[in-house]
Length: 171
Image (cartoon, rainbow, N blue to C red; front, side, top):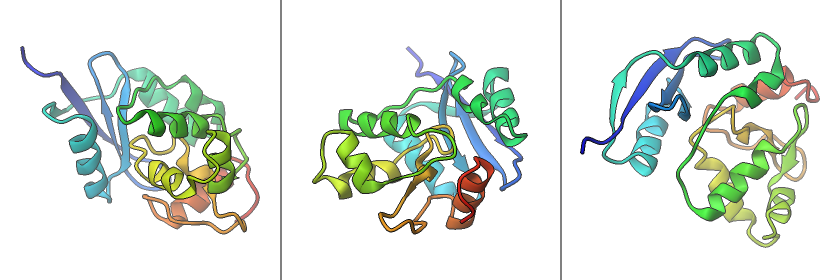
């Protein structure tokens, strides 16, 4: 049996090109910034080992949802179908990220408490950083306890733009 083939499309956005990887069911599997190819390679290796990746258009639901989000319809992110590999703990963290309301941020410490592991701040940070679906699973909404913008796989300037776009405080 041939492993599933994933489709890769590069889309232009106001903050640079993004690599969008989808499966045959139309689910978003990976979304990374095109100028960070190591993140795409890592996500594919960790979550999709053995699956071929070919160039091809993402499904309309994914493309349209992303286009609407960048055009100002922020709730469109919730319409994009996605699925992720990963550990049970990572899934807890990633689901908690999705629950952060638009225009709001949280800290790593609050996120750790939210997933029932208040002492696991570093592990939560690692799971946040391992998120293979940028923007849609909004790891950019996590900031330092003191309100500082902390690292972001796409770069702090993109994080700043995303938070401002979503109506968060001016950063």
